[in-house]
Length: 119
Image: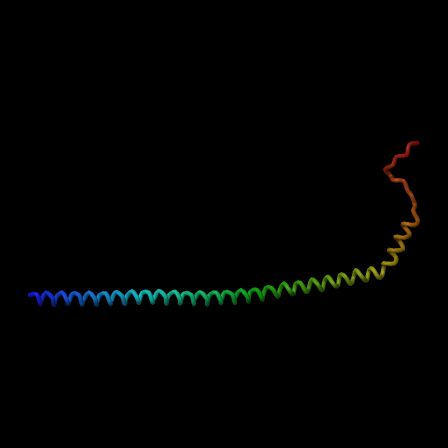
C-alpha cells in the first residue's frame, strides 16, 4: 500500500508541477501582451501626434500666408500715401515756407476781442 500511496503522491506532485508551469506560462504570456499593448499604444500615439502636427503646420501655412498678403498690401498702400505726401510737399513746399517767413517777418499786432477797452 505504501507503493500505491507513494505513486499517488508522485502523481499529485507531477500534476502540481505541471499546473505551476501552466500558471507561469500564463503569467509570461500576460506580461508579454501588456508589453505589446504598451508598445502598440505608443506607436498609435506617435502616429496621431505626427498627424496632428502635420495638420497644424498645414493650417499655419494656409493662415500665415494670408497675414503676409495683408502685410504686403498695407505696405503698398503706405508707399502710395508716402508718394502722395512727398509730391504735395514738392508742389506746395516752397509756398508754405514763403508764407511762414512772411508771417514771422511781417507782424501785425491786433488786440484780442476779449480785451475790453475802458474809455
